Image 1 (cartoon, rainbow, N blue to C red):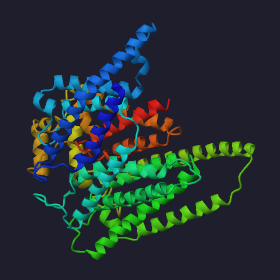
Image 2 (image 1 turned 90 degrees about the vertical axis):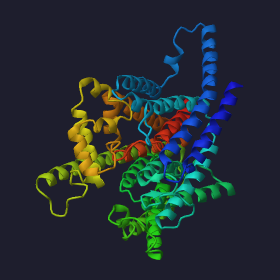
Image 3 (image 1 turned 60 degrees about the vertical axis):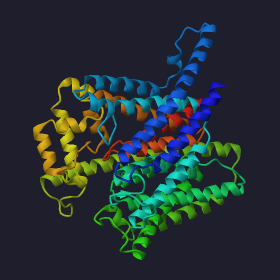
Image 4 (image 1 turned 135 degrees about the vertical axis):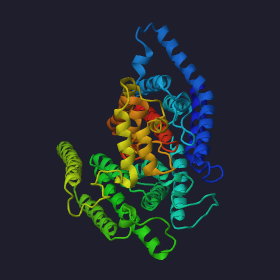
Length: 531
């Protein structure tokens, strides 16, 4: 009875967060950060007040059964996964970081308008465990989240072309949809949109599909197009880290089944045609496009590159399907040989992907290093190969400041940080760094290093970053191992992977990190059930 009631409340809470939270604002964009934070906190505290006691009751009942059976080992040691342990250690570490902080108010509550302090982080850790315990595994929450995010993306696309559907205060091009700044929009996109893409791609095999299955697939295809269009429209070049991470991990998984690999090429084709759809909107409404045009999003949507990519991937999709349909059904012995052959192909593809990834990173590092010493023709200042304060539309200044800040910390703060969400207050307490930031950013206040791990090093220290990385890696690894049993599990791994990749040049905020912990809790439930 307790578990059933917990399932109901957990589903209701998730529907609020995935379905209503993205739209909630107060006075338009004036207090959007405060409004989002308070909405999430009030909903989560209410859910904690109900699900917390329910969780304790379930734990007590399970422990009582263990005692009756005279089982000597600890229930926690048996039940907790590596991810669970990392979440617990992270919660303890941020508590210690908060206690040792020289800025207790900011460490506890977080900076005004930002609110990534100890209370929010601790609440996210608790909600991870509660979702892992009480989510029922149904797709209702996913469908609600897809419908809400699809509407958010449509509003963002319309905003980019000066088509204002809802009246908002202080409307400006860098604020779109109901999510606020384009970096917030892109962070939300990187976490949520992989849900629909994975549901479209990693489907179970069926000989005959009902009308609902076909309609569902059509709707998911439309969602993918809208998601990619929103990515091309929003204006931040960081979205290409999301695109790269998405297609990398999707290919890594898709090679496991022929139908997945075929549909992978269809998703890639939709990406290309989505870029061309934005291009058509720019042609039809040239005066409506209201953002700067010297970024990768504008360049790609104003060229034939995405058209070429879309056509090539679509041809491969149909060709792959045609060749697959001509193959005869093999005998059982032959099928076993084919399975071994497929595994060998998987290993070859995976190895090739890792080589390409490592080679790309190494090439970027080498070219960047050379370009900083001797300017390479064609790699002009301001490109991704020019590592100075201007790099990444000013991200370089934030990253270099974060590195200097961490270098000046005493050892205890290097281990535990200056306190959750204390990056800004600490930065502006250092005269030299504060002067440099004011010279570069003016009246705008820098709240993070535009690199989540570097921000974490300053805020929660080396230990905090290690535990946080442990959470992400262990969770992705568990999902990748269990995805064969339930392909839906892959969805959660892709969401977390894309978030981590995107935040290499971005930051955690109240519109992406809460979803990461909730999705990890939901994924943990499915993984535990797959045992």
